[in-house]
Amino acid sequence: MTDRTTGRTTGRTTGRTRGRWSRRALLAAAGLAAWLGAGLGSATAADQVTVGALRFTSHAPSFIAYERGYFRDEGLEVELKFFQAAQPIAVAIASGDIDFGVTALTGGFYSLADKGAVKVVGGLYAEKPGVPGMAILASNQAWEAGLKSPADLKGRSWAMTQQGSSFHYVAGMIAERNGFALSDMSLKALQKVPSMIGAVKSGQVDAMAMVPHVAVPLENSGAARIIGWVRDLGPYLVTSIFTSTRNVEERREMVERFLRAYARGIEDYRAAFLDPEADQATVDGVIDVIHKHVYTDQPREKAAPSILAGAVHMNEGAALDVANIAEQLAWYQAQGLAPEGLAVEDFVDTGFVATTE
Image (tube, rainbow, N blue to C red):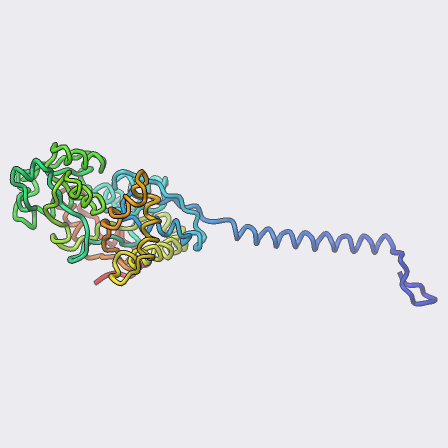
């Protein structure tokens, strides 16, 4: 308050002045708290995303993006949920139990696609000539009985997880390439990959296809024989990245962020396993990450050779091979395993990643 006679400010204030400044202080404090709260919320609130995967090295980009924080960099809080076969992943996507699947397209997937429930948004593991990939194995008993190559599979039994699985499709590729009917093979649906491995090791089933990080150790240990490679049968986009139609339509920006993070995981994988000039530190770093999710029951030193043997071709940037997806769909439709009226454009969204030639 100012003394009118001296012009000096005194230490006294009126009640009106105190009230005015108190209100201003409160408003300022409230504004600061709101600003801090908004900033804190944006820093901590991440989209919760669940990814379905298998404990295969062919799913390594999922593990890399997860462990190296690439998903977090995109504002995604990711949980990995593991399955033992591909078809249940598509069902989990459609039901909303998971957000993304990274696995093969199956008969179950196509049925859900026909209902408008799922969309392919990226590509991943592809069989390419000259690049390590899935092996075709024979049991020791079948080998001794003359099963020396895929051409000898006519009249033999074949292990797969389920009808309409990727293993079913590989059997069809073998039959077509070698000039016999798929019905000439006895197909055994064993539901889970471990059951397939056990059936071939014990000689209950003659043959199967298997990812290299499993196939090569099986042969090295004398448990089965590699008689061929899927890469020699023709192009095959083995695994795709897919999500729910709802995510594509209502959370498209989230899907874009997911794929950006995933592409970084692919880049690291390719740099370590597909670049012949890769240094040992780069290779070891990726092996360490994969070992957190694959062969976890083994010491790192024992697991490393099997993980390295599992190197497969990964499409750069999660590029989509739409032409091969169309070939797969046609085969499934010919077998009565996919709806006749389903078209590739019904379930493939090419707006997220590049497409291959």
